[in-house]
Amino acid sequence: MGKDESEDVGTTLQSAYDEYYDDSLTGWRETGAKVKANNIESVCRGQSYEKVLECGAGEGSILKFLNKSNFCSELYALEISDSGIAQIKNRELEKLKEVKKFNGYVIPYPDDYFDLVYCSHVVEHVEHPRVLLRELQRISRNQVFEIPLDYSPKVDRYMEDYLKIGHINIYTPSTFRFLLKSEGFEIKDELLCHLSNDVIRYNWYNNQGLKKTVFREMKLLIIHPLLRLMNRLRYGRNYSEFSYYTYTCFTNNKEGFKALQADLD
Image (cartoon, rainbow, N blue to C red; front, side, top):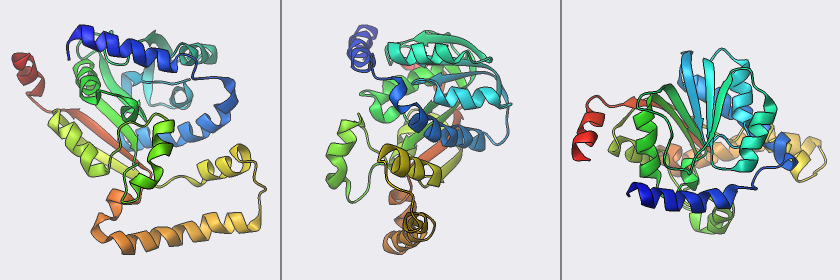
């Protein structure tokens, strides 16, 4: 895809998300963002960085948690949505040095500018993920990706639900690993997670307005683990492909791949 094509597609993507973020779901987003921020730090194994960029920063919930930690000295954010950018700026985060709007594909930073870029729950929304991945690889030495694991043998049943929330790409851990490796990323660490109890509770008691009961707490603490055990027996060695909620990985650029890509271009 040429630069002009990327800009045209990006303009359409921008308009789709311009008014996406408001205050109505702040608590919900921050409950999930706390888990995402912990996952990012976990796969980085205690490393700290100078310059860190979030690509697809939404309204800044993950930035909020990383701003409080010792994860990095400086934070930067890219977002396609005007409403998201406004909310990020309103947070007045101490470590946040810059927020830029971009078209979803062309990233306005020079080569190797960042020590780390993270991209959390973004790739599944992107029409041309390889275009974005190449840009992330260009501007950074290390990367963290997190995706929802939407694909399962029952995917047809939930297809309309995924499309309603903008998930136009669906992955298993293996298919996402293949995508990354085919683009020259080297996977150094990875993490598979079930949906956290805090997120489930918030969805039940806040989003759905359900009453907190002993049965629901038992369902969360006893029945859900039993269902996971049944899935383990059902899928066997394929359990990790179909039974987790998210896949998070830490990557860096395979030696020599950028030079090869530049030669091909």
